[in-house]
Amino acid sequence: MAEVLVYVDHVDGAVRKPTLELLTLARRIGDPVAVHLGPGADTAAATLAEYGAVKVLAADAPEFADYLVVPKVDGLQAACESVSPAAVLVPSSAEGKEIAARLAVRLGSGVITDAVDLESGDEGPVATQSVFAAAYTTKSRVTKGTPVITVKPNSAAPEAAPAGGTVEQLAVSFGELATGTKVVSRKERESTGRPELTEAAIVVSGGRGIGGAENFGVVEALADSLGAAVGASRAAVDAGWYPHSSQVGQTGKTVSPQLYVAAGISGAIQHRAGMQTSKTIVAVNKDAEAPIFDLVDYGVVGDLFEVVPQLTEEVKSRKG
Image 1: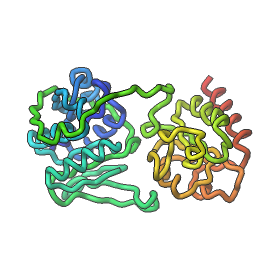
Image 2: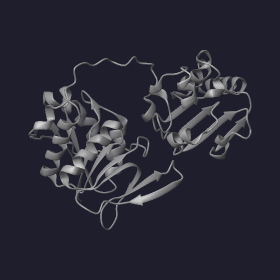
Image 3: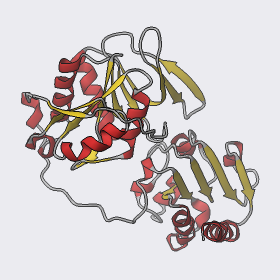
Image 4: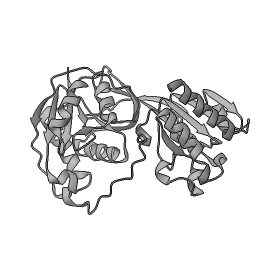
């Protein structure tokens, strides 16, 4: 089978979940070859092999950490020249989409962003996308060059499929643009102990109906009982009740968890655009005419301050 490059999203060799999802999807269209840029390849190799990487192309250089985006594009370009892949898969983060776009320009190829599924086709990989605020589903393929495809987190459940995972060194030559934008400082984000919002399998979000920052504890308690991430609507963020980093919607983050719980969120199109591809959607709102109820799998018309705490207690009792 043809080889498929998978860009490894990691922190010093600790592989993040979206990469395992990409390896799972890559096996549908070819043999996954992981591209690990930066330190920790030897640490990552075992995990990458467990999830199907037939080999790992590794390169480590200060440029990958000290400068933004372009060195990673140089690395992926070198991998493409080494392997001649059937496709290149990249996690659909803000950085991932920029890497993918730049790589496609260099390769003279087409790019597909925010895919939610992949399948093998007679003329190359076929990607499924949810478009126009998830009102439509499309299937697309790249017709020129090597397809470069970014895939949304939670589009596939990671499935182990042990393979060789042999680490091979990748020679990377950095171009003039590689050092154009330097990272001058880093600050570790304060950990809440909850999953990353865009990667979480369960998200619990609060909106205008929460009524104030002091009431978000109700949302957080349910999230913690479920092992979920906490999100917020634009209305809640604009009011200063929750940080923008947790905003779900067209001007915030796009999530696609297995379960999305919306508490006190009316369901404006701006918010729906950021969560409409969630597998199961539950809403709690006292307004029976709220637009969110047109979208949900399960809806509860009621006071969230009565319903959500009861749900939290029920979850705790079943887990305990």
